[in-house]
Image (cartoon, rainbow, N blue to C red; front, side):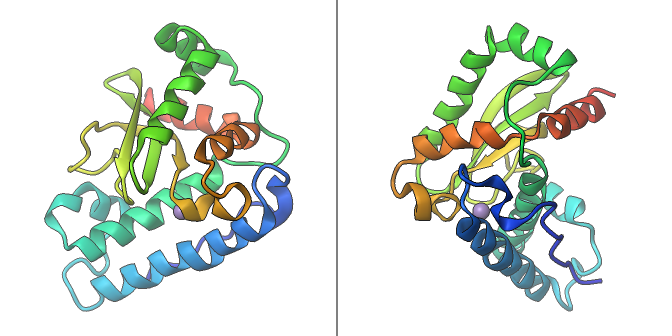
Length: 202
Ligand code: MN3
């Protein structure tokens, strides 16, 4: 069965003023849809047709660039929408908060480190908080790669990811990626991040 676009779990304007409605609409309806359309085209009639998104992502290094980029794009965006939410942000709680503090020194130090990963990613890509061998780690990937890919420099289970492609922020923040990252923290759905962490810890 062909891949289809998951509905955004909130309205386009739900993340205002941090992420604007027009950006969300274009990002979800146009960019994410395009990854899905191009993925479906790239796998049609090939042995990869019928494989799950997770299977494709896991063998990114051995599939065509079109499948790798678009499968990554579909996986990353599906993940991203879920870790954002209206009336969110703030700080994590429980084990996730404790482990962030223990690993990075403090919540602020963690945010700074993830911001730095996002800012220093040259061109387009993602910054991640991952669980790797039972430990928290920050990493970044180019283009639409992610830490689940066999080709990732740092492999692990994504807990939180931030899209630092210009299409994620240019309308409102122009060249100011750091300002967008500052706004991102105001809409992080920590309940979802904690859910990912709890699953990864099992
Ligand atoms: Mn994007």
